[in-house]
Image 1 (cartoon, chains in turn yellow, blue, green, red):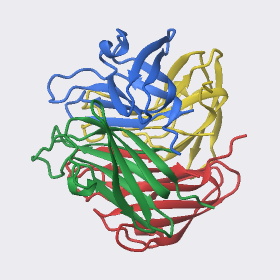
Image 2 (cartoon, helix red, strand yellow):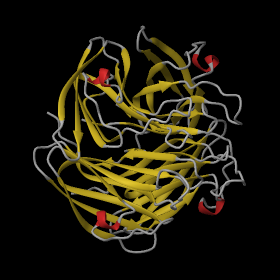
Image 3 (tube, chains in turn orange, brown, green, blue):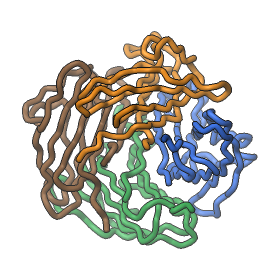
Image 4 (cartoon, chains in turn yellow, brown, orange, purple):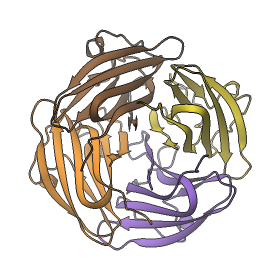
Length: 123
Length: 123
Length: 123
Length: 123
């Protein structure tokens, strides 16, 4: 039977790129949370930094059989937390049921577009 | 002994880029299914969205000792399902025997070319 | 104790890009094999396609405590096998001792440079 | 309970790009070490090459509930080790407690920007 992922996910490399108004796509980072179960998932996001204490327990919900995309440069997606640009941060995701989590960055600092994306380390 | 992968694979971050006729490569997303066993694999693809119910049980076959590439922007590769562009979606892949699955995006929205690719989360 | 990786690795998405003489970097794909043990590793590479039988048992050696990079567009790195460009292929790597394997593509089809890289699925 | 990652991490594909003074971002590679535990982590970095013996036991510390980013082109981040550019290398990371490790490359060789990033293979 499919387990539907895992309850804990880690992403060490968050770093919000600078906004660049010239391109037609906006630089950003995003977190995708994928819930294949028939129950809603209650998820907590913890944000870690290099030189200060983490901000923990940002609460989000992922509906049954839904995927959501959270913008990490949008405080309204993180219960008001504003992650500063050009600053190293990391994410730990904890869910009450199994989910699958992925991280993506779109950087347009030099007008051209560059991606990096990865599925997290899970437990 | 090599197991040949796993029976279930997850890809949270699907997002078909806009087509851009100026470049020499066409923006797209693709799903690679790799079967190293000596039997054909019967695979079901389930497509999940943010705001509506999933489309499940799209059936594909992967021959013994073959790899196939499905275009996620080609309905004919998905039993007629048309995934809308610029819309978050996620994939669950279920196979009757062990396979290995990978996802790739080629984005040419800004004329330049950007890749992201990953091997899925497996169970 | 560190195990040093695994004996079997899978890479579903190989696709050699076209050469483009205009940029200063040459489009290619490469396979990195990393052996942290104190013994040499005897490795076999199996190359799979969409519409024909695989080519198996290409033999390479990775020295003790060494990493090697094989060019997948160089037949001399693959015991003479010429993988055709713009053709889907996949790799299975088998080693007599634990190693770690990674795949990378550098595409310069449109003059700009695009990367994708991933550590393989392992068993 | 969340385990906080693993004690050993592997990255087969290190290759420092050439510096290119024309873009506004500097080409580099970086290693992110993420420690969610309430204890500091004592970490050793081992650097492997294709044609010479590895340099082992480069010592770094990651504070409790912190993420750090080490620049692999900065000898001061590696206890003085200078990794030569355009040379294949690989990393093994060993920690006394569980952490999560990720690798990233930013290449600007052709003025445009290209990323590749991955979470390591762990044990």
